[in-house]
Amino acid sequence: MDGILYQSVLVLNAGMIPIDICTVRKAILDILREIAVPINLSRQVIRSPSISLPVPSVIAHINYNRIPRRDISLNKFNIMQRDDQTCAYCRKRFPLSELTIDHIIPRSRWKKTMGDKSAFAFNSWENMVTACNKCNFQKGNRLLSELGWNLSRPPARPAWLPQLYI
Image 1 (spheres, rainbow, N blue to C red):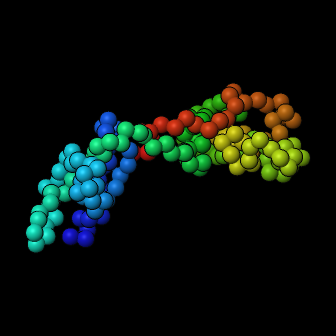
Image 2 (image 1 turned 90 degrees about the horizontal axis):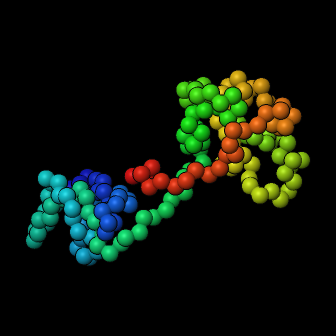
Image 3 (image 1 turned 135 degrees about the vertical axis):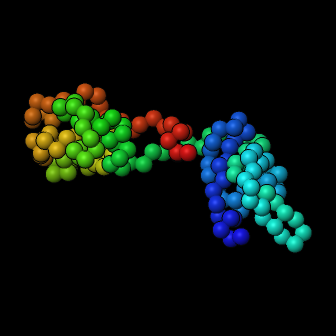
C-alpha cells in the first residue's frame, strides 16, 4: 500500500489545465478536504478497515483557476533549445553533440568590459549563446567587436510556456 500512496497524480486547475503532479496521498487528502474532485480513477483501490477509496490518476482543483508561473532553468540544454540548436556566429544548425555554450563576454574580459556593476550577470541568458565547436574555438576569449562578428539576434531569457513543465 505504501507504493500506491507515492504514485503520481496529474493535477488540473478549475479550467482543466494541467498545473502540477502530486502523490496519490496528497490527491486523496485534497479530495477528502473537498478542494479537489477526481477526474479519472485508476483500477487500484486503497482499503482501510472502514472504507475503500479508488485511487485517482487525475484530479481537478475546484476553485483554483491560475496557472503557476515557473522560471525556465538556465542550463546547457535549455540554451540550445532557445537557440534552436543553431550556432549564434555562423548561423548553421548542428546536432547537440557538436554544439557548446559560449559566453559572449568571456570571463577574462568581464570586469574590464562590464565593470563591477553590470545590468546582467556573467552566467545569464543574456551572456550565453549556442556555438559550434569551430566558432567557439575561433572566438576564444575575444569580444565580438574584435572579430567583426555580430549576433543575428540578441540572446534573451526565453518566454515561459506551461507545456514545458507538465
